[in-house]
Length: 153
Image 1 (cartoon, helix red, strand yellow):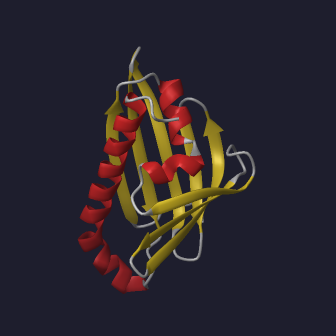
Image 2 (spheres, one colour):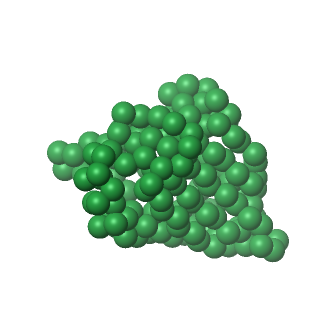
């Protein structure tokens, strides 16, 4: 489902590195587990670019969340768009890199999820959303540190 859902979350970070390097690190799909906690990412189909299918599996204790994403736009070094197409997580997402000066890039991660659980999901989202934003923001901060230290891509 490519249209935005009711669950929306945005996180942003400034990375002390040029946009091409930041974009390459963001789209090193199988290395995302280094900066997204409890998550293993793998490329299921394609070369990582447009049309590819990416799977992220997050495991916390006994809970397992499988997120399948189809890459629908791949515009280096500026933007990658995905559509979450799994059983639970559905809806569009975008990662944008904006070069601010020679060695600084702003990264914006924006997701619009269709919430499971009907009315109950819509009621629960305001409670869950701050944790989602905090989690995304912390992941992006970890990502920035890894890029700035030369550990990604």
